[in-house]
Length: 358
Image 1 (cartoon, helix red, strand yellow):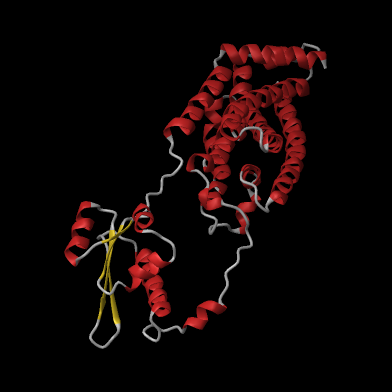
Image 2 (cartoon, one colour; image 1 turned 60 degrees about the vertical axis):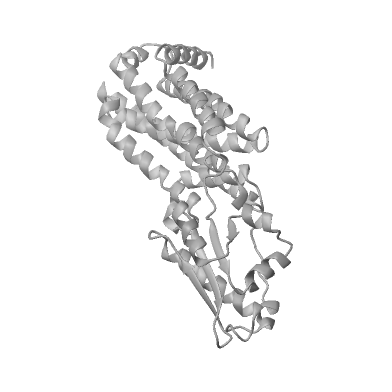
């Protein structure tokens, strides 16, 4: 234990001298400042809708639902008095859309939806369906549904919580933590071992009382301590102590996974430059689950085979809890099993490769 302590002390000093630790902590502070003061909480701008309702049917209905005219304007709905005003408003605001509602001579209603040239078809279809449903409710049998249909339909959600209202800068945090703290150990371990090999420190270690396992444990500890500090700098100002222990546990397990993979690559390649292609490839693979986090509709089963999937969704469940707490401990269990296997395997492979080199 004393030998591990001495090696760890040496690694801390070298990490500070080589500016690795200072860069990691400094970059964490920089990212934190971006999250707090630069990246906005909300990046979605509501579309402005200019509405000319010659029938006053829709306008009166909306106002009767306790939505004042001022509240409607704040939400982006502007009622105007002519078709020309709709077009003028759309010319002044390139994100705006327009609705024109008129009554035909035969008693039916005509709804025109005016869009910008780049408006997505999905938006057009959504508005068409919503207006069809609204007109069906307001003036049956002018539409295609009788009023009792809407009374008989109830929508309930299995997922409780306010996920749609999460600030954008907080939604980025799980991904940033995984990239900057969790899997950075992969590259860092390759770099640390490569430096030791180029300095012939490992050869000198063979004639010292310390073993190769103690050498590796010291490196793992360095990355875990640096990761702990970096994680705390990013997490605490943004989230406070809520969920801190569970999130820290997930990050520690992810760091150990990355550093174990880095140990294997460090033994296979003589220098970090030789391993850089594999490091970048692995980091790209480990980053794939972030797509599923931001686009839940894309969640194929094979994505769950990537360990970082459990890190990302575990952190997400910790930071934004609803009825998903089981995801945290499921992720912890899977990562812990992976770490035990990788840690033992990486040590054995590294020892074997280094002995062959001798």
